[in-house]
View: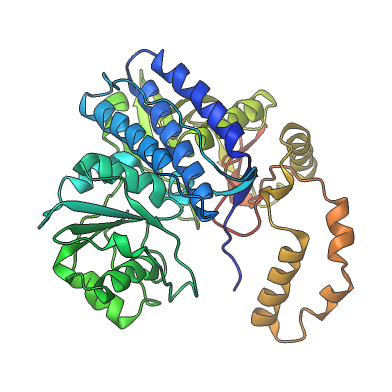
Length: 436
């Protein structure tokens, strides 16, 4: 089945650098605390994303890699001082890059509550047999690799973009990446379905004479490799040194006290908790770090002002804090609120225009439909799609940040009769192909 998709945007590196310089100046003037720390992490993510785009174009810059590592050291310093001290933030360097680069969405920071702070903690648990040398797997490895290098006092990391079949990735590193007596630390948010990106880097190192005892893995979870992994990669994964950088909600418990995990069991569901503050029940939902979460907070405020969603109270380092609706009930079998849902869809169309590249093209959607219909219903089931002209449809599309999950269980009916959409800010940007 075709389900997953990578989301990206085209950006001018010079414009992003100018905005980043302004952001760092603003952060430097903020008072100490979790809000400043969260903004600093957001700036690091922006810098790492830009580094990924530039390096994917073959325009690696030593100065910019050093700058990203300097930002990572500021994040480490902020965390270690309990958000009290960030030091002097580094100036933004100029880089020689094309006018347009592709910036991949860092999925762990957007969807899966992958936090740089957890990689700091994980790196400190490593038992190394020599000086550390970090290899970050792009996309997210530009940021996470810098954080681990900063934590271990290592040089700026090598970063690598895997290529080939998703279940049999390969990598190429420059020959100078092989150094005597160092301990290699491979950093990524996975492993995913096969763990082949981690495996490809380790394969390359071992092929070039690195002992398996000098290779460590820093993944974002403690799970084993899944069935799509090769047997060789599975054996290595089981015997290798690996320290998972699992999510730790300590910064939330410090603010809200006891947390109660909450889940509806749906696919791609974001991390959620119940909490109480001043006798009021709250829902804490992971929405994304940095600019990703900030945009969703603004969406949540706009939708609540229009009368469609619960009240958003704050954004706390990636988590949207909402008032819990205690009087909401699931839709009754006979409740078919077509007009109300129509008003909701119409309001989103006005409130949230989306860039052209923020979702799958019509051609990609037709390909997905053809593939999935054929698999599910047989070879001729998709023939009727042949009458659709992708180019003609694409010209007629006006992209908006759609809500791609309008299932009945996503709605509540309040005691006063109002209809409420429970999850409304995530379904235009998830780890699926469709997007906006």
